[in-house]
Image 1 (tube, protein in one colour):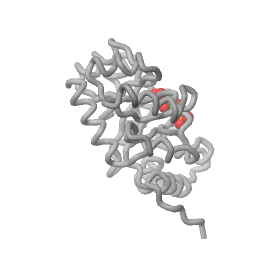
Image 2 (spheres, helix red, strand yellow):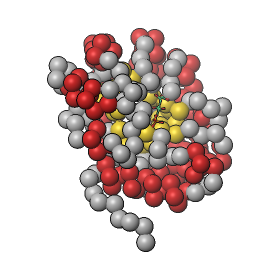
Image 3 (spheres, protein in one colour):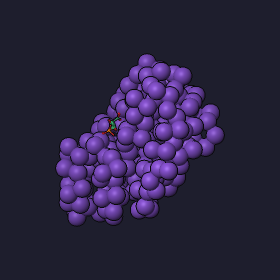
Image 4 (cartoon, helix red, strand yellow):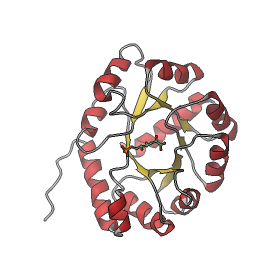
Length: 221
Ligand SMILES: O=C(O)C(=O)C[C@H](O)[C@H](O)COP(=O)(O)O
């Protein structure tokens, strides 16, 4: 898979929904109901971070949920790429990027959203052919003003900002011409998962989607 094809494939993913939930699964029993809740709330593209021992199994289970499109996050090494792909991940996301990691994704045929936080990192990814990149850590690396500035000399690169994105700032990010979607963990909070509040998570997802689309959010009855 070429970098250009990978970017095209992730652009299609971003068309499913403007927000990609970033998920940390600690209890494997949460995998299915969480994926069902997020899909029900209108957020079907799911990034499961490889940060817990059950992450690969969670990818396997969530991939079977109707409507869910599941990828792996925190993909750092060629080994991560192979294991995530074998578990059923259809895309990979990384906080940064290295030639070794990108080469592994290209060889494996797993589209990757490579991370970047500075103009030089964005240029290195672009030089290789990645026109769609993750801007991470979005808020800490300069947020909306930084992305606006990068868009001046590098308008051909689009971004999925992640890291510190929430209901408070998601509309500002999405209003930028070089942002096509945002990632964030706020739609899958650990406390609600631990409490098994799947309806609450579905509502949170629906609310996030409405805000991202610029619709007014109805007060709960
Ligand atoms: O795991 C990765 O691949 C990452 O790059 C990090 C995640 O995208 C952020 O941890 C999400 O940030 P928050 O929404 O602020 O919680």
